[in-house]
Image 1 (cartoon, rainbow, N blue to C red):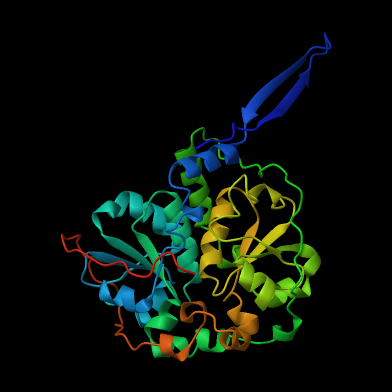
Image 2 (cartoon, rainbow, N blue to C red; image 1 turned 120 degrees about the horizontal axis):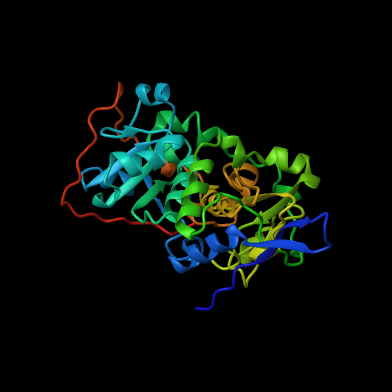
Length: 350
């Protein structure tokens, strides 16, 4: 595989009062170093493993299979109801927890949990980029685990407001440009990735999740990315002005990544918002101002998706609701890793 050489830039110019001689210091663009590192270490976002999402049923089946559930919600929410055996670690503490508290590779599976599945997808995306390939989120979050969460979550999130306003004609990508500039002060790919992850995991969800009403109400502010295949984009339709980027293909440097703007917010949407949350994490690691659209196309064209025969995993349906048990109270001791084996079914699908 061929990799692009790091971009070089002129960073500093000083003029001596005693001469016209110019001194220049050349430094590498950290985002290019990071991108090359991510490509060399599996190119997760363009790999068959992306997005690392389980069904709620598959997650439930893994409870006794050397699996650690990490609940990302605030403590008050966790104490009210959570999956038995789960530990409560908010996103800002995840990296420290993996580094200093647990032996992460000793678990067969580490499953992140949140209310709707999109915060956990974002965190999983970051941890996957750091090399933790035993991490997962599960589809629809606790809405898929429990009826009680569904009635205040995915059940009221789906909508049909834009079904008649979708475009069919394609919109062109922008000309290629350079990657964004990031400055962590680190010099190798892993250290840059870790430094970026520390920053991103401390962000509030408003920094990476966005509602479609904000996007459609302010079209001049956003570069909309329809992150789904040709048939969905050109036959089903897409948000007005959105540009197609094919999942697992178009975000390679030679295939479209460099056409993303560095001076404008990027909003990605997929079917459910899970895949786009993984992808927003990847783009933010590189320095892009990227968001994932909450609930994906389910938020604005849910009935049309049903009528078009989309896959069940791509839509919120009554059949996704389960009644798996939850417990209340503070967390118990962290479960120990064991030698039990597992089946990690239904990952990598959108």
